[in-house]
Length: 178
Ligand code: ADP
Image (cartoon, rainbow, N blue to C red; front, side, top):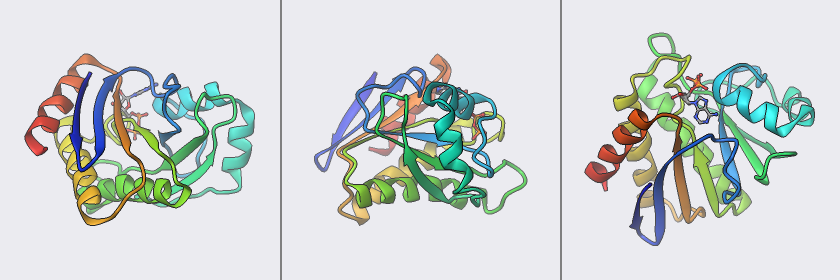
């Protein structure tokens, strides 16, 4: 675990499964446009949340790249799930801006709902093919810029990484940017 304090916020990297983060009020789903269960993060979140999540999602889909929508967490230990659609690397452009919007719009939803803690997966770095180093820089830079430019609500922001390698990359970027 690596964590830093910045402007009374705690920004942390953590290795683990995004669907097993009981201390966080909201988790972010690296969703597909139709908000369907699918594989990777979306599969893990939907299977832990139960069918009611897919039912609520049905009414909110489709979403566009960079957009974020919020639902209840159902059987998850988290009160909310924020679903955001990352860019498919090499297809959705401008990809860096779209990926940044995923983080910005998710944090804005937290502010609107007064959510104190949020966990992000490494959006777009799985099936969507975004190189992890580049995605990590965009994620962490956007978190910092959002804190700098708005009085945002969440005081605890966590990036949850599935692999040791991805965690290592994010730790280096966290140190470099903050
Ligand atoms: P995308 O379609 O946005 O690329 P994926 O779900 O395929 O989303 O993967 C995003 C990242 O999340 C990848 O780095 C992948 O290794 C990681 N990942 C996959 N399953 C989980 C999980 N259960 N918890 C946290 N991270 C996960």
